[in-house]
Image (cartoon, rainbow, N blue to C red; front, side):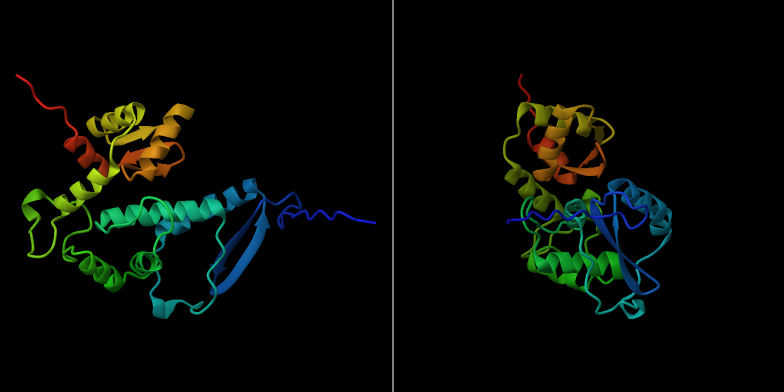
Length: 232
C-alpha cells in the first residue's frame, strides 16, 4: 500500500508551524533555528539595534574562520543581491542588473563591507578601467579627474544609463517625480510597486525598505539624458 508522508516543520521557539530557518553566529558558535515568519521578524527586530551599533570584524578576529557560510532564505538572498548592487553603484563598479552576481564581485563586497578590506575592490575597479582612488559616493564635478585609458565617473554613469533604454510611461513618470522631489518614493498601491520594482531591476532605483524606494545615480543620469529638447 502506498503511503504519503508529510513533513511539518515546527517552530523551535513556541512549537507553531515554522516557515524559515534562521542562521546566525554568537560568541563564535554557528547556530540555526526553525522559526515562523512572525518569530523570525521579531528576532531580526531584536537584533537590529545591535547590528547598527556594531562594526565589521577583522578577519583575524573572526572566531568562526573556516566555518561554512550560513544558508540564506530566498528573501535574504534577494535582499543581499539588492545590497551588493547598491554597493557596486556606490563604487561605480559595473554589475548586471539581473541574474547571478559574479563570485569575485560578491567576495569583494564581503571583504570591504565586513572587514574593511578593499584590495579586491580596487582590483575589480582597475580591471573595469575605473580609477580606484575616486571616492565611493558621487564626486563633485570638479573632482573628477579623467585618466588616460580610463573613464570618468560621469562617463561611466552615462554609459550605464544608456543601457537602460526606453522606460514605460508609468515608470518614466515615477522616476522623474523622484528626481525632481526628495529622491525617495513610497509605493501606495500595486501599480506603484510594479513600476518601482521594474526600475530597481533596471538600476534606476533601489529599495530602501518595504514599499520605500530611492533614485540611483543611474536613474538621475537617465532623466538628465532624456530631458525634452528646448524648442523656440
